[in-house]
Amino acid sequence: SMGRIANLDGLQLENTGVERDKMGNITVNPLFQTMEPNIYAAGDVIGAPSLASTSVEQGRLAVRNAFLLRSHHFPDFFPYGIYTIPEISAVGPTEEELKEQGVHYEVGRAHYREMARGPIAGDTEGLIKILFHRETLEILAVHIIGTHATELVSLGQMALSLRVRVDYFVDTIFNYPTFAEGYRIAALNGLNKLGDTISEKWS
Image (tube, rainbow, N blue to C red):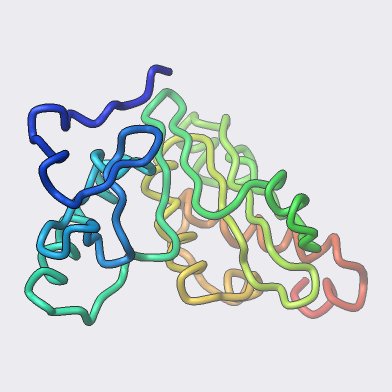
């Protein structure tokens, strides 16, 4: 992938106090304010994640901050989506990142073939994966590959933002048959790996 290069050369930023990083992107603070106090920047020109969804929100917050309406902040968690066949989407860290951080996590998996909706729709190739903390049970990440992955991941995004425990999905009734039911299957799969004392509570 070639990535993106900010189209800034014609703006004569060298005549302002706006600073750019080594990649050529504009440097901003959490308010999306540049080193020039009255100039704000958002979207691809400030670098990663450079997603349409995050760029829109950055722009909205930059305008609010410019008008001193600072009651909002950029979300801690946002999803990535790859619109291939099958779709791929994720929110939160990868397993590799959790290992590097020394986090004690467990994995719950639900294959599309295990959900009633999969065989009914003739769509059995897919997976919902939930990463959660082994001690606190707090959900740390959700990774999905399969049909509607970019939509299903939003439920995981809300779970992370609200610091939901994985057992929440066990006690939740989903529409049936749906792919979203995979969250419950994945939660049960993960909890059953923690041993008899834990798993008996939700079996």
